[in-house]
Amino acid sequence: MVRIWKKSKPESDAASIPDPHNVPKHVAVIMDGNGRWAKQRGLPRIAGHHAGMKAVKRVTIAADHIGVKALTMYAFSTENWTRPQEEVDYLMKLPQEFLAIELQELIEKNVQVRMTGWREGLPAHTLAALDQAEADTRHNTGLILNFALNYGSRREILEAVKTLARETADGQRDIDALTEEEFARKLLTSGLPDPDLMIRTSGELRLSNFMLWQSAYTEFWFSNRYWPEFGEADFYEAVKEYQRRTRRYGGLK
Image 1 (spheres, one colour):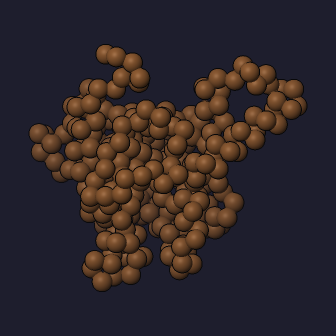
Image 2 (image 1 turned 90 degrees about the horizontal axis):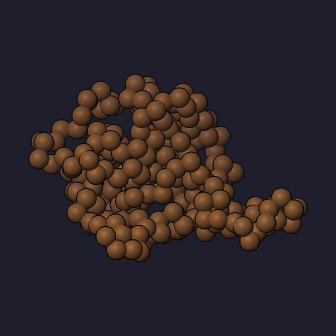
């Protein structure tokens, strides 16, 4: 298989690159449409997921090139366990396959790999690949490539509330003094900034239980392209649209 991280930059002309002075710090991506992409071509759904892995590479390179600090990929939700077992098994192999091919280049590119989600239920081989990648890139200071795996925002919020309730019952916390910042530190995304830009592919217009708290003032950009078709030009188009917007956070500017 061809490694593509050796490229110093994406193959784009200068006019297509967004303004480097207004780049979103954190971009979140709902990677949707792999199965429909495969169906259109008479292929099994898992072929779409394999093709989608290549799109992860393209977008990661593009994000790194323009200075995005964190890129979160919604790889597997808590609801995705209801899919056919064959498909779930294949999806659980993708992190291992991706990292086996690309980890060394990620290290060389100073990318830090993280996972956001619940470990229980994930196969040992999936966790082993992610744990190795996190350990090997822990001290990298460039782009954070964050995989949201076995993640669901409603559970995330509920677990945070339970933790705060236990701390209050134990006398560790004055619940009336709780701030939004303290609550955010109880979420799985603690340590990451809220996403400035969220991209969803395949024409669907919903969040699908992804970063509900964190996206309160996120800018959304929707594409009709299926995820395996999504490339650097699409990513840059989303960033340029983000740059055309004025973020007022409920106030006036």
